[in-house]
Length: 79
Image (cartoon, rainbow, N blue to C red; front, side, top):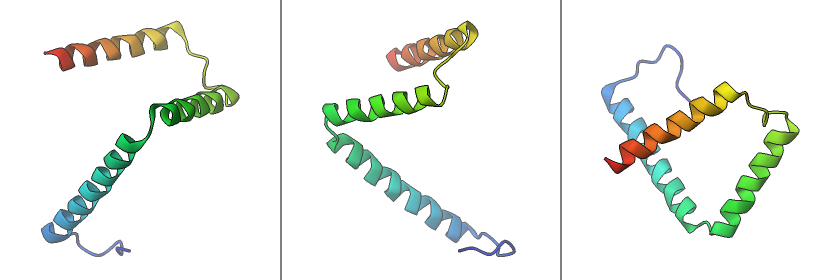
């Protein structure tokens, strides 16, 4: 573990970036291997936990903001 007073050199920064690229690649591989059924179960579990925490209640303004964000993403993806 890095000490707070230890300098971050460009070589260490590159090594850190390389390690995280490997982590992200491994995660993408794992996600691709996940079946649609398992993804659905994971989503259902997340939604149930959000509901139990009271996080499922949104205001109309929040819904509009999310809808607009999705519309911008769709437009950017299609262009």
